[in-house]
Every structure is written in C-alpha cells, then in structure tokens.
Length: 262
Ligand SMILES: Nc1ncnc2c1ncn2[C@@H]1O[C@H](COP(=O)(O)OP(=O)(O)OP(=O)(O)O)[C@@H](O)[C@H]1O
Image (spheres, helix red, strand yellow):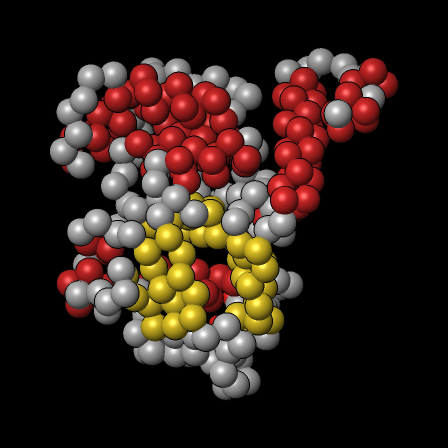
C-alpha cells in the first residue's frame, strides 16, 4: 500500500479532557516535530502512531492511514505495519559484518540492485565523522556509526514509509543531514526533540502539554534561517568532538564564533 498521509484524530489528555488539537495530518516528505516538557506525552503520541491505535489506548486517539482505518492485519502484524523507529539508545547486536547485514536486509526486502551496500555505507558516512567500512563487524561500531548506518538503512533499504524518531540529539551524528536524508526519500518523519536544530527544521511541530496535543506551530522563514545557523554550530561541535576523540588539541582559534555563525 502506498502510504501518502497519516491522520491523528485527537483524544484526551491525562486529565481526560479533550485535546486542543482535534485533527492532525502529516504527509509524505514532511518532517513533523513533537515538542514539550518532560512527561507531557511526547513518547505516548509516538507510541499511539506506532500501534496505529484506534481509541483503545489511554489517550483514545485514532490513527488513520490515507484517511482510512488501517486493516487489522496491518495493526496486528509488525511486519505489515511498515513503521520504523529510531532512538539514540539503539544498537546492533548481530555478530556479522556491515556488508553481510546490508546484503541480508536488502535481500529480505526483495532489493537486488547493484551497489546498494556501497550506497548505504556512503550515505551513512556522510552522517558520521568516523568512517564505516563494509568489513567492520556491527558489534564494534560506535554509537554514532551505528545510528548513521541505521538512518541510511531506513532511508534506502527499509520500505517503512513512516519513520518515528525519539530524541536523536545525542546520537553523535549529523542530525540535520539525517533528517533531510529521510524526508528526501519521501517518508513521513515524526521527530521528538528538545533540540532547536531539529525542531526548527521541521515544517510544523505539535506542542504537547499534560498528555494532550495543545497547539500546532508552523515553522517561520526566520526560524528556518536560525535553524541553518544552529546547524553550522552543530557541525562545528561535532568536528570539535572528533578532534578530541582522536587525541588532538584544541586552540582558541577553533572557537572563533563568527566563523561558525557566518
Ligand atoms: N493522553 C494521555 N492519557 C493518559 N496518559 C497519558 C497520556 N499522555 C501521556 N500519558 C502518560 O503520561 C506519562 C508521561 O508521558 P510520556 O512518557 O509520553 O511523556 P514524554 O513527554 O515523552 O516524557 P519524557 O520527555 O520524559 O520522555 C506516561 O506514563 C504516559 O503513559
């Protein structure tokens, strides 16, 4: 099934009161943000989408796919759900090389195209400062390398049209590029974040409060500008981290803020 949009029909907050936002539609290629303080219900909203809930969770939300109630099979069978989830705590456990894993995953999805392994690894290497090689064992990958590979894998091999991301701010990868990559592959991307770099690169974001969807904010052009500048600062921080990691010394020249903010 070609998933073009998901619709969230609002339910109730933690006090049982109707949510302010009654209906929310997220379309293919859109990056949608979920923001709110601790305990405000961000993960709960993502989990409702992941389960394709139909008024049967505490929030009583309903999730429609292309305007319709998804088939029971899609709800019950995780293989048919086609929703990928990424979080900063995820790691690979399988004892195999990067190449073996990618070939196996591509095969299981019926993808046989030439050069798919190289393509995924190249994309992953754009997201991390520490290069990944195809003969590396999955279990020796660092956190940043693992997450980069997962993002590239979800973008290219996994056919999950819906990607739910739970706080990747400390995942040690180029977050901006990671989100751009996923949305560029025509996916519906929903990202929970406290990070302005990510929050401002979404087209819209929902503000959670007390377990309910309070309001939807459209990202302004000015905010997009701010996002680009913050992203530069972010890449710079990542490069500093890499220098320290590789035993190099930093100098005051490295923190000339103007260079970063230009
Ligand atoms: N609409 C709701 N109805 C009933 N319970 C809810 C609702 N929304 C959230 N909760 C409950 O409130 C608690 C906090 O919610 P949740 O974990 O989703 O918050 P969060 O914003 O993700 O928090 P954190 O930022 O700390 O991860 C959870 O136990 C969750 O089950």
